[in-house]
Amino acid sequence: MNSIQSQLFFLNRAPLKSEWGENIILIYDSFLDSTPYRQFIQKFPIRYKVTGGEQLKSIDALPGHLRKLSQLSSPLQSRDLTFVVLGGGSVGDFGAFVASIFKRGVRLVMIPSTWLAAIDSSHGGKTALNINGTKNQIGSFYPASEVYLFRDLLLDQPPRRVQEAFGEVVKMGLIAGGPLWKKISCLKNFDSKKLWLMLPQLIAEKYKIVKKDPFEKKGIRHVLNLGHSMGHVFEAALGQAHGIAVLNGLILSLWLSHRHGLLSTKDYQQILRSEAGLLFPANSEISKMLKKCQDIRYWLAQDKKMSTQGELRFVFLKKPGRPVVQKIKLEILLNDLGFFIQEFGKGQK
Ligand SMILES: NC(=O)c1ccc[n+]([C@@H]2O[C@H](COP(=O)([O-])OP(=O)(O)OC[C@H]3O[C@@H](n4cnc5c(N)ncnc54)[C@H](O)[C@@H]3O)[C@@H](O)[C@H]2O)c1
Ligand SMILES: [Zn+2]
Image (cartoon, rainbow, N blue to C red; front, side):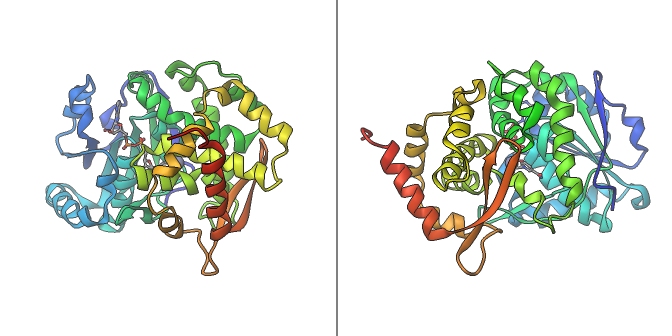
């Protein structure tokens, strides 16, 4: 396996295809065919087009994809096959998983096309597929040998994609604390240019944690799931985009951290009143969303971090820079969520 740290390239031009040898399959998001990046895509003689989104990560579709990729690879030399994966986090999770099992592992190069993928999912080697809508149940650790961060491609994204990155950016800031949180907490508005400038620091902070616990064996890497236990519920139950769901989950994690006496009122208020905090949806909005979620118990129980004793390893925050993993009984968490719905749902129909 490659080193957990991929080689990173921050580029102002499209990467050169010749950098990856002759035996390449490009796996890419079909969305990009309708963008100026089509020209870059066309340079690859062997291409595998996929539709980005959670459906791509469904385990049910895997055999079909593998058969087609196998056909495509037949004229190529399998000894030095390279998969170049161009797309957002779903294409990355899928493409990297396939690269990890294809011919027992082929060289993997990633070109993230969404902010979320550029900031987070392309780094650290986690690959993932879903089973029956439950996220990331199947996967491997398979870091890309190289990740190309291509400025124009990233800056050309519509505001929606920028918005989807906000949750993971705030998450990283709260986990890291210090200068990164200071910078993020002061962001009056959030745009692509600022994201590009912060990108190296955001990635470096993720690697600081990943390197201490590359295979998530020591519990250290688990802090990167801040906001994700509830985020995955919003994603599964309401079909929210990952980044949006994570922000909503993060807001609940902060509230729960305060409710359980881990995050002081002063620190909680400081986060909520920071420029970044002012961009959070209101608790009344989150309460409405929770109310709409069917089967919260079911989705939480699917969490990989759920113990047989009905406890969840939940990531709380003590202060910016001090995330902490603590067990919480599912019943207590559900009770807390019920209280949240009541408290902030007052006046709602
Ligand atoms: N492996 C990890 O460590 C890790 C970390 C975080 C998230 N994830 C996973 O990443 C996924 C979320 O990532 P995502 O938000 O990039 O999802 P995504 O891949 O579904 O992309 C979101 C949408 O953006 C479109 N898109 C792709 N490139 C675009 C571009 N340049 N401009 C405009 N639209 C574009 C896609 O077609 C899709 O409709 C989830 O499946 C999540 O579980 C993985
Ligand atoms: Zn995430």
